[in-house]
Length: 114
Image (cartoon, rainbow, N blue to C red):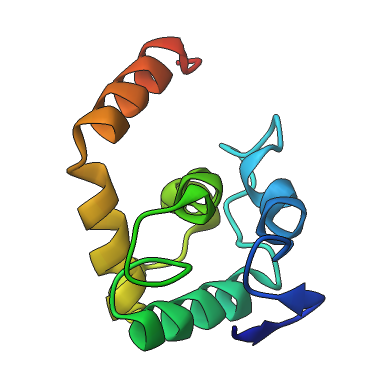
């Protein structure tokens, strides 16, 4: 497992609480600067994905991918260019192609405030 600030990249990696100020702010449309730790966290996850070659916890899709995806999937809110994170971008694109994920993203889009 990769070491990240405040924990280990794994079941309790802290990505939710660490990025909560980035993704859950009611005023996120007005304040577009990324959370100070977001780039470091994205880089740690990118390194872990490079190591595993596929998913967060290894070669198979697991609850770790499902749990982390929503926090990282909202990259527009974090204003971090995923072009800087090759493995993270590949992983995000792969998950977005999964039929269940496409359905979930569709439901979210329907309920997102405009």
